[in-house]
Image 1: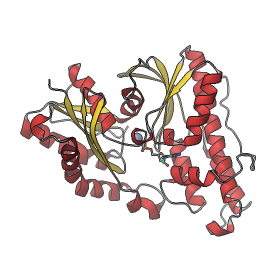
Image 2 (image 1 turned 90 degrees about the horizontal axis):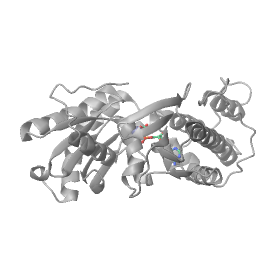
Image 3 (image 1 turned 120 degrees about the vertical axis):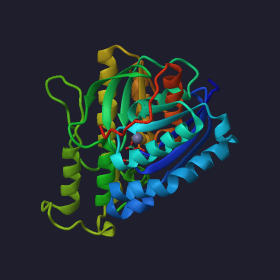
Image 4 (image 1 turned 90 degrees about the vertical axis):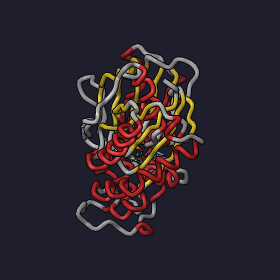
Amino acid sequence: MSDLVLGIESSCDETAAAVVADGRRILSSVVESQAPEHAEYGGVVPEIASRSHLRRILPVIDHALDAAGVTLDGIAAIAVTNRPGLVGSLLVGISAAKALAWTRGLPLVGVHHIEAHAYAATMERDEPCLPAVALIVSGGHTALYRYESHRSLELLAETLDDAAGEAFDKVAWLLGLDYPGGPAISNLARSGNRSALDLPRFRPKNGKLGFSFSGLKTAVLYHVRGQDALAPTPSPERIEDRADVAASFEEAVVDALASQAIEAARREALDTIVVAGGVACNTRLRERMSDEAESAGLRAIFPSPAYCTDNAAMIAGLGFHLVNEGVSAGLDLDASPR
Ligand code: KG4
Ligand code: ZN
């Protein structure tokens, strides 16, 4: 096939389309964030998300084609996220992809969002990266995998409760910061003291790997509200040590992520750790993962920040390989939330 794939992503609150050549060369990547529409709720509201995708999807696809300097005539296949995600949101991207594939007679492929996040870390690299341990950290997902090939992610461990990004978003809300919370906490943390608060670190029992962020979140809640957790949250300007809370919280999350990823690499006897998903944008995580991996004789690799958060370039990139391997979907391609 000619090598251009149109990717479409609408699994959560970003409406995105991209054109990628050879699974690697990103000709365009358009991402429209709905964050302002969800901000007042402190998190994504599924009904608002699907309606917003519906308004945006066709202009975003047009924009991606224009920015790549191509028309649909130059596109060889269409790749769309079909799992996991918010069902109503996924369906908008899938319906658009099916309509285009059907009217143009193009191959269609459904892409797994988490596999695409992992692929994003390798698509920008010239050297071989796999096999590796993959740490996928996003708003809906925090897990470690043995990453053997772009179609093989074997789950090693995952969070028992919140995803790391979700914990960032909830603590940000508690501190009166805007959604999405990750970037807001990270900015505030720069002026804070990372060891000001003695926050709990979850350590999995019985020699297992794993994560849990609910105890950490509750500790921050008690710190901010006092011992009466049902008391109203003080207004942000009355939380005098906001920057210290942000910095100490961020450090606790990064501690957990880095130590478990390194332990997973040791157990699996792998020397590369791929870190991807929205939280992989976090500067402190990138610094500490890189330093600690190096000290342990390992290497940590990340996508550039634009391809850590949700985007369609990673969908088109992985879609290219799937189509070449003969994977294809029919017009009955469906959304799967899990
Ligand atoms: O991968 P993503 O865009 O969407 C999902 O698939 O969930 O990840 C979004 C998550 C949000 O929870 C956001 O707060 C978090 O990634 N995030 C960050 C940063 N940038 C985004 N978390 C920590 N530090 C950041 N700089
Ligand atoms: Zn994602």
